Length: 204
Image 1: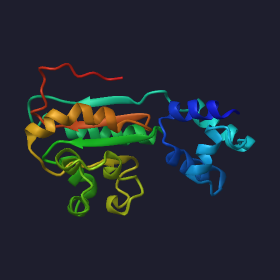
Image 2: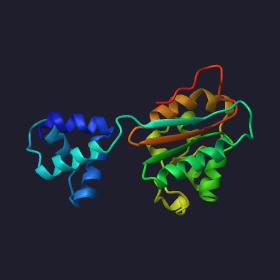
Image 3: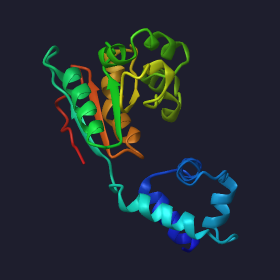
Image 4: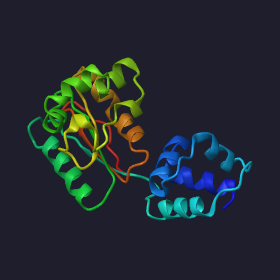
């Protein structure tokens, strides 16, 4: 495998060099670092055959784009959060890599899955409120399925809400969902009732 091929496959997987390094180390029980990934991609160091095979295998089983499911309705209490959680659970049980994004200021999905851990998530600044209001990097607001604050209550990754202005949340909801989807095969988003229905909501 050539460096340009590795870069193309990594971009197809929507992974950063650091994320690819972590996946390779987990799959191959190695201790590669990010500079080595860079050297491989720039052709300054030959790519081991096992790395080429591992990346090709990852790419062959990974959709080119995440399928994004947005649960939105102008009315509250119609089951958006319940449907989003159940969709995330069902897709994860089928083997999909799922990210659940809570974009509702009421943070019902967050509290349902994290219980008391939702307060600690806010204290750590790892919520969509901090992402939207304080420019916190999106990547820092992701809770992996094995995160202690989830307490084993979810078989998928998630991004908690914790309240902010419904108007601010609505304005950022769909753009945030698209940006969240990199690296997952499915992305389910529970939105606030005030998310504008005047604009079309797309799914890919």
